[in-house]
Length: 279
View 1 (cartoon, helix red, strand yellow):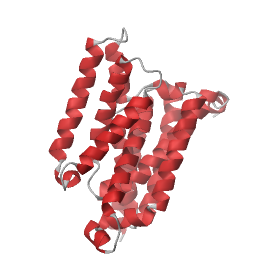
View 2 (cartoon, rainbow, N blue to C red):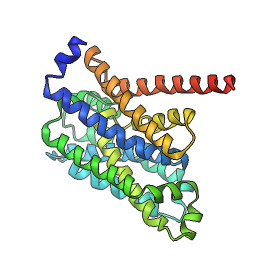
View 3 (cartoon, rainbow, N blue to C red):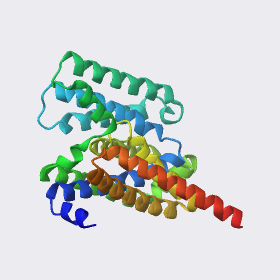
View 4 (tube, rainbow, N blue to C red):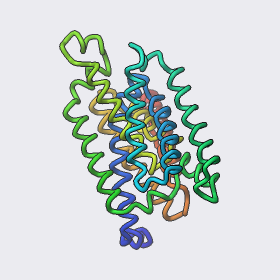
């Protein structure tokens, strides 16, 4: 505990925890409707697109890589939604093709136009996460804070619409809800969160950050509001514990957070089974 208190005196630790908590809160908010609608694979596909865009930004030597990564990821999210009437439901092949193509293109560009002497290390860090979240400056933390607040505000304002569209989109359209616009905004918000989460867990582990808190809370709760609130609490808890563990043990941040999410899921699943046996 004394060592943890000592680390909190350093700004980079405080920045990392603030950013991690905000990102985990956003991914948990969006993860519940994504899992319920069986759209969780979209996060994985968009994370691969973000990796490809990040590789292009590196080759172009852009100072602020998010200026390219964020628009490209948002554009792909919108295209996945708008290409065909039921792309989100039946377009899993298109998402798989896009994600694999983005990964291959990004890796190819990083090799052809080498911008670092350690390409393999850079690729591994981008895919699985690295300690980059521990080197965030105040500007990037402020940007992450603003975007996270916008995502949270969107979820609160559109909560009733998201709830209705999640469980019965046909009924939502019949009652006057603009489900198409809601899905479009939701896709854009997902893209923003994916780009933010890349600094935390890497592009290949983002899906775990989206899925595990939702699945863990669904083991214990059954109402949409209860699942959402508990998913946020679980996600924030795992992020804080995983980040502190990575700092103390010099372990990868992303892998530590996902491992913590896995342990909590197993605990929740065991608790749910014990409650069923108790009844």
